[in-house]
Length: 296
Ligand SMILES: [Zn+2]
Ligand SMILES: [Zn+2]
Image 1 (cartoon, protein in one colour):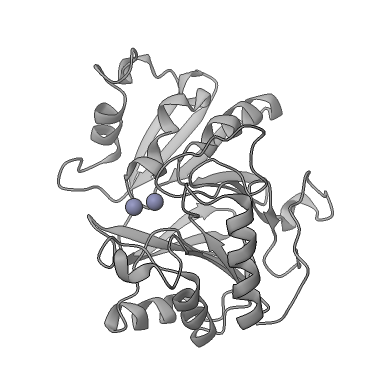
Image 2 (cartoon, protein in one colour):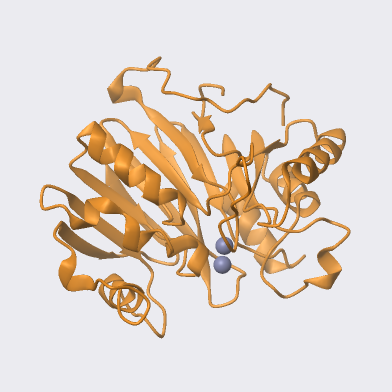
């Protein structure tokens, strides 16, 4: 990994032509639960959600609370079609979905990609569970958009159109989850928000999956020194993630899925410790824009 200075990007740069665009904007980087603190937090308090702009198309990776503000922004921008790809259905990855306003607009086309689970075998049943009484006043019948459900393979490749592919890989996580690798031209970003290393076959599979990616966003929920208290909960820490990323010759590794109880100061300290060991590590922040192959 090589060292680069990394800062959140407040706005679109417009430096690439639309046809070349391959750009990820982080809209939620926390795990487990959204975090609200007076005055906000520099890293952001929303749970997992990433906007992907590829060519003239838009996709969204996970529907944590970060998707709520994103939905408003997409409507304001006039976006008419979006793919939403879910890594799994734990609350922190779907909790924003009932509040994603494009679902309620007849001028929007939304395709929901989901692997299914024993309880909710497809995207339609997932929405029926998620948007219903007694949890919410609305139900699936209130959704007005042109809604499509598509099966996401746990191990396979889907096309997002326009030359962008999304590859999935099952990872070690309670109830199952997939990691995603998004490929466009010669570049790739890997997104594995929830997984636990296993020092065995699972790690080897993940290393293969991440091989030579420009960027990998990985589950750094725990601190290395605290991990032993949470073994089996399905999450990892930066030391293990850095080792796996190095084995896979990943360009840069981003700490993702920050613990919701971790303050800015605590995250600063964790990042500093991580960078002393591996300078190319960065910490995911809400608003950060990542462009594989183009620098940051
Ligand atoms: Zn999670
Ligand atoms: Zn999870």
